[in-house]
Amino acid sequence: MDPDYRQFVPLNSLSDEALGRALSQSREIRLAKGQALFQKGDEDDLSYYLLQGEFALEAGDGSPPLVIRSGSESARHPLARLKPRLYSGVAQKDCLLVSFPDDDLDGVVAQDQATSYEVQEFEGDDPTWMFQLLSNPAFSRVPPANLHGLFGKFEPLEVSAGQALIRQGEAGDYYYLIREGAAQVTREAGGGKSVILAKLDAGQGFGEEALISGEPRNATVTMTSDGLLMRLAADDFRALLQSPLVNQVDVAEAAGMVRDKGAQLIDVRLEDEFKQGSLKGAINIPLYLLRLKANTLPKERIHIVFCQTGSRSSTAGFLLAQRGFEARVLKGGLAGIPQAGG
Image 1: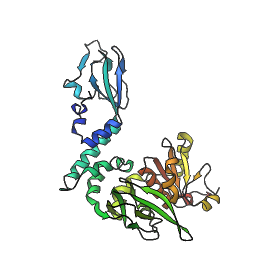
Image 2: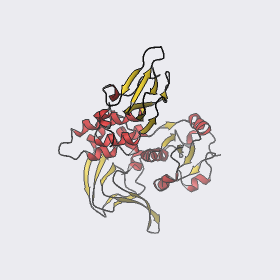
Image 3: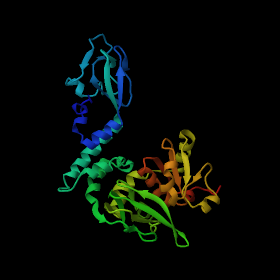
Image 4: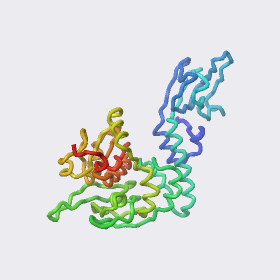
């Protein structure tokens, strides 16, 4: 029989979609009688809930332990929530528990509450897509305050198979999210030929490059099926979505991340530019190829992207954030580093 996670606070306040996201970050723990889970004074970043058994909280001052039984009112709340912990926790009987990372759980609750507020403003619309979007790594990093305005700014757009939504060389005016359907990204390669750079499915976005850089569209996006898009005007995109996702670092901070955290430098300029000189240890992934090659990058590393001035790398930082990478943008690019040619 599956555990009733909705007995727990604040899981009882979550939508079905948000509860699913929270549970994807959880871990079940089995303890034998007498086995300790945490010690008084610990400053871990986990919340524990008791699913089965009895659990004792010991203050260590000679007073009788506080015994928590599964299914009781006390068991609805995290065990010894305050940090540093005021009690040591020991299994009084064999126990089954579940743990959640504090920051992740709090983030899911905040986003779900912010989104639920916006859902009330969409009478007659299907709110499911909004909750689905929150599984997109880009939206998981957007502050809840921004979400209030963000969903209200999206406009629905019905599209047909074969319809070109943006064209290479045009000015950018919207950011798009695919709510239903699929599309492909192509780029003119000369001689009338085009290269497929990426295929996009429901939940994925496009069109951010021109909005961030201010340059013309660098690719064409065409629907490969009928579908429904949600579009966001350029000014709203920059204010509500771009700003919280593009994190900049200066030269000293970047050097420290490379030295202390093994961060990877990525030069997103063209190959010919890269050959003329770049930063030591950098790899070259031109911006137009980043969608195609992002899945070859390790998720566990920090990636510091740069270009000549910071324009292209800001787009690259956003693209990587969309895909769940921890990315930083080198402020000012190579032009801001004295004697950067070497």
